[in-house]
Length: 118
Length: 513
Image (cartoon, rainbow over all chains, first blue to last red; front, side, top):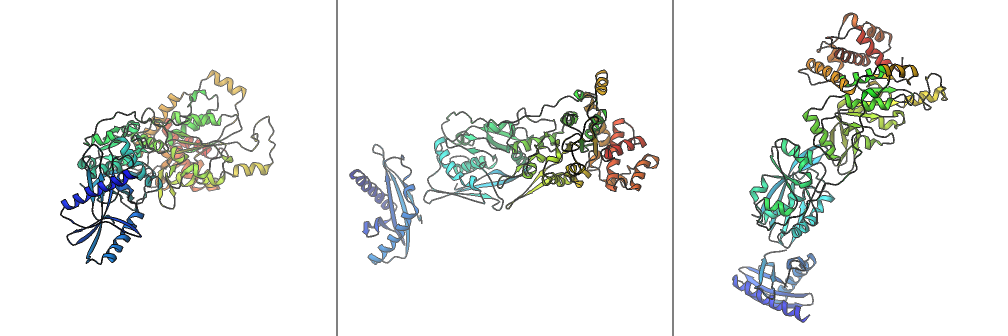
């Protein structure tokens, strides 16, 4: 488990770097409530973006995006609303993104970013 | 290029329509949606195509793929769209050339290993593509020979999805695979067509058979067991003329749709179908809830449908023959579609005179009551019998006629076929400019009216008398005239004389008289 948690953190850091590189502003990381956890909350222009990060070292267990099921997506939407209520931020429009990080141990990481997945 | 399109063919009966397969790639979570009225087997393409692409070595993009099959209102069946769907997806993701797949019609089912599997009905599908103006088709290797039977179409046979992708400009490493062979199906094969010379004696019946072949008339053989009815009927395809190119292609298309092998390419010999008397109405005309398959009457199209022991068939099964006999085609209605098949066949039916088979046979006793005899033959309904021009008794052969036959060998099939071809050529010439090609097809009113084919005068005296006496109906009158024309054609004379009309009348009334 320790290995997975560490991999997840590494992937999230890579994802944050990627988002910052695209000119987005990170508002929150690993925000938790009783519903679950949001990996990254960011601002992209007028949009408030909730980002789910999936990290894998290989494709052996399928593509990272394949593990985002409709159930998980529905939970992400509920989490986004919970975040807005909890932080009382001025949110005009919300968006849910997914970032897949393929981080093999011996090679540079590959990042894929899908915008507005729900 | 997020949208790519290619084409495939949806078959309904023998008629195929071009289906456009569009693939759209959108930046969404991985998904695969097929829309446009797919049936269950086609819906499963979702799972087949993604696995096949991955295992073949040209994986699909991990995004949302939406496949649209248009026209969306047309019902689509089966697994033949797999190749088109997979290539449209690969083109949408930019792995193969969009322009290249747009020009080609794709047919074929994918296995999970990425190899292409042969499908049924490739010939009518390629034919439909050619008629719609497409000149290149890509098919599974095992179907390539069959597809190549369609003239004017370039056929590309491929063994796997990877091969197909490379053909369309995909930059993948080649991986040679063994093509999936065609399914080995058990096919009874053509019924051994014996020679007409094998028939000993029975000159009248041989004559009737020749007349049936020359004019395309339906034939009813009535006789006791062992008289040689089946033997005679099985000689009919052997003396029919060769099929023309269009008919041969249609016969092959029907075989292809029925999943029968087409070894040796197009056969120009007319088909011979002899369904058993336990056959159901659906087996006779065709059926099936999703893919509508042709039945025996359709497979007999351009050939012979032989019903041995006709009274043993259920009356409902015999009566389904009436529509195809009249219109030359059969329409099969199902909840979601109506499929129309060609069914222009020559009907030959054989029957015993009674359940024990001995009625009217010299030196043997029939054990059936008169009522049993009546009921037995009444199972062949009047409307069906009325459509049969030649109705002749086939008596058991006697020792004397066998001895005579030994001294005087009968006509061989080759000789008979030559005479049939000559007679048909004469009829064809006479019917030039009409939609009919054989004497049996001529409609009665046209025959007596615009066609001016009533021989008139003394020639039809016996026939006119018979009509006057109520011995035959007006429809029967026309049918006798048609047979008389065939007899005249066989004799090489310009018009039937009283002798021809008399023989034709005997052929028509030979059983009831």
